[in-house]
Every structure is written in structure tokens, then in C-alpha cells.
Image 1 (cartoon, rainbow, N blue to C red):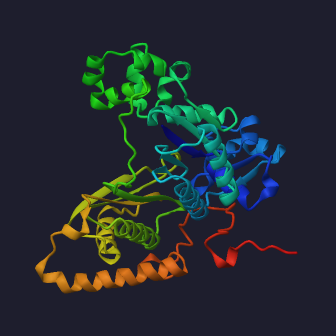
Image 2: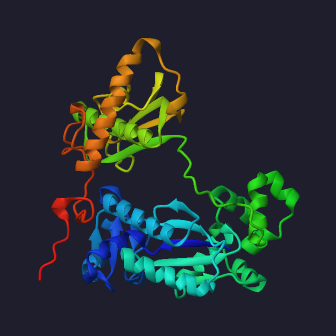
Length: 416
């Protein structure tokens, strides 16, 4: 049996951990630059606020119903996510972290009554982290995903105990809600009359093999209760890393664009070093605001193959700025920029260059020192000068909560 643990309305729940006065009140969390709703409390759902809805379109409702609005506080959410996952690992040996708010658990060896086990885990995670969770339990990971959705509609726990439970559940699950069936496959399946997970489970193997390859066959078998997707306890390294952001306000100042692109390149370097990878290819892009018809439109990107695969921030910044100079045009006002690194390989087997060997060793030592200082004293305490301060282009986060768990200056104060 597998369990899928999912944190309820995760970003909102994180905000409520340190603000219990928000319990039972409508709360929403916004996307980058305070644009759209990306997390809602149950109370916010009841009054009609929709997922991905631009917040400016619902200003009147927000004011009338006293909705509490927060900017995305990814530092806080990431730290609380790690606490939830570590708590799960303390109660279950086999844990696969699936996303920031989801994890699969293998229940092999769990001898307790499954409902009692799930109830105790829910209670323990809530007590240890303050985050409410739902648990779906089933013979396969695909069914556990569906069971978790059912758990959210009930008391937070749903267990697929037998074929009758399974059959009833998949008959009431829309095909687009099945794990592994993406948007394009959903359109294909709907065209041939496959509307539910049950309909999918009745398709012929030959058709699935021709249209959806082995993935389709695995999904079908999983829906029938046959486990085909094992627990992966090793988080795979990413095949590409992108750091892209919309600016807090539009700009045509090349100095500010250089600060932003340098910062994004440095972020890519940090992520590469964290997973012990190096990149062979880099792409930089900039574009105007596609939603503003009054602005001249421009969307340009440029790529380069690095002479030597690297994860060094200084080196990545140097090439990113060269690419920016090639695509920058003074005639336009820019809204967004980004840096993407691809062609990743492990740093242990990277082919180096004989003539820059010693410089690369110095870069590596410097990167280790900078990463260590920033880990201990906070992000960007030490950075490359060209990155600047970011005050002119950083994300608009006008409703940002405190970083209660990661910043000594913002730690919660308790007065007695």
C-alpha cells in the first residue's frame, strides 16, 4: 500500500502557522509581483475567489469580505515544507518527496490499522509543524493520488480497501484528474469518449501502446490496482535549470537589466552546485509586457555553448552579460528576463580545459566559501558586485509576511 500525503492549501496554511488569528477567515496568497491567486483558504473558496484569478479583478469583493491577502513568501514556505518532510521521514522509512507540499510513502511494514496509522500521522504532523494534511491510501501511487482528492472532501483520510472502493472512486474521477494524463492526452481521450478514469481502465492495451506508449499501459495497470510505479527515494537531478522573473516595474535601463540577468545567472550557479552539476549550454532572454498593447512588443533570446561546462557563478554571469548585450535594444521597455542552463552533467566527470585548470580551482574554492557564508548569514550576504541591490527591478511583494523561521530579525516575539 502507498500513502500520498498532501498539505492542505499549503501556502495559506504556512501563513496561518504564525497567525492563528487568520483561522476560519478568508485568506489568499498571490503569485509573483502580486498578480494572481495561487492559494486559497476554504473560506476564500466559499465566497467565490478562483484559482489563478487576477487579484485586481476582485478588489471590491476582497475589501467587502475582509479577505487577508499575502505576497508569496517562498523562503517561509520552503522551510516549512522541509519540516513537514522531515517529520514524515521520522514516522516512515520510505518517503518520496514529490513536490513542495506532497510526498508518497510506502506502507510496507506498517502493522497498525491503516486508519489509525493515518490519523496518528495527521495529528503528529499538525502538532510538530502546524500544517494540516490529507492522506490518501491505496495499492498504487496513481490510486493514492485519486484517494487523496477524496480525502480532502471528507475527514482528511481516504483508504481504498477493496475492488469495490477502487471501482467507485475511478468511476467518479474525471480523466484530466488522473496522475500522468496531461492536457494534450486529455484532449485526445475526450475526443474518443474517455471521460473518466474508469473509461481509461477499459481501453485496449494495443491502443494505449500505440498512442501513449508504456506510460499509458502503466497508468491502466495502476488503476486496476497493480503497482507499476515504484517509490523513488532519490530526488533526480534536473535536466535544465531556469531562473526567470517578471520585474516589479518595467524598465529599459541596461544597467538594471544587467543586474537582473547577473542575479539570475548566479541563481542558476547556486542550483547547479547544490545538485553537483555543471552546464554546457546557456540561454538568456528578455521580453516586453505581452499584455500591454500600448507598448512596442519585443521578445528575443540568445544561446551559447560554454567553452567548458561550469557551475561557477562568476563565469555564468560573464557569458550571460555577453548574451544580453547581443539581444538588448534601446527602443523597448522590458518586463521580464531569464537565464536557462541546459546540457547538464555531473561535475565529477566534466571535461575541463588544460589552460584554465588553476583558475577553475580558485573559482571552485571561492564558490564554496560564498555558498557557506550565504547559507549561514542569509541569501546574497556575499554576491558579485554586478548583481547590484535589485531595488529597482525586484519582485513587487507589497503584502509579504515575515520570514519567521529563517531570519533572526523577523523571528516571532512572544510577550507574557
